[in-house]
Image 1: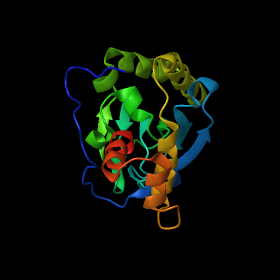
Image 2: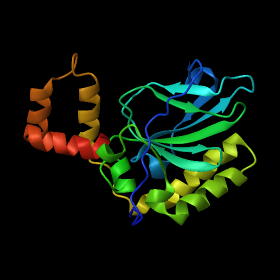
Image 3: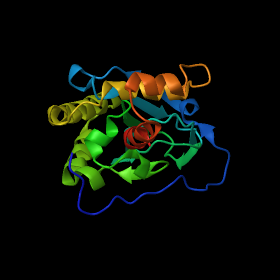
Image 4: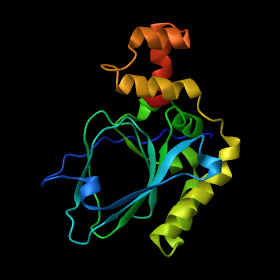
Length: 208
């Protein structure tokens, strides 16, 4: 995808008062396998319907992933987090999301993921008016299931024009997450046949 001429407006997690609660504990969180058109680009599509009596301060534990999220009518890219991300959510509302596979987000959005680490960026900064049209279609859907389908359908229409992520970056992502018990940096470098400098550059581009 081609980014807008204007650079994205980045923002980190705000400093909020009150006791944060893990996002999965304040509602009904569900994951769905992506349709065939999206399997090479996304790990899953998900929804989280918040309880009406839930607190509004949500905490998301960092996992290094990048998601497109539909929140209160807007589509937002949640950059890879390196610390717990806090956000305010409307009790009783439903959040819809699609989680990129390692290395896929930069192919869809344009810039390296190191530019949005810890950030929350409007999808319209990357896709322009198209992002607002997709958000409207999702919002017009009458139920959570229909909203999930609307997001999947919109992304599926875009997928043929996006190159899938390099498969070796999935290996690197998983190996680095479990480095203490995994193959070790030397094995990663040997398997990819690259220098440490090249690996760092590719990691910064792929997942920040």
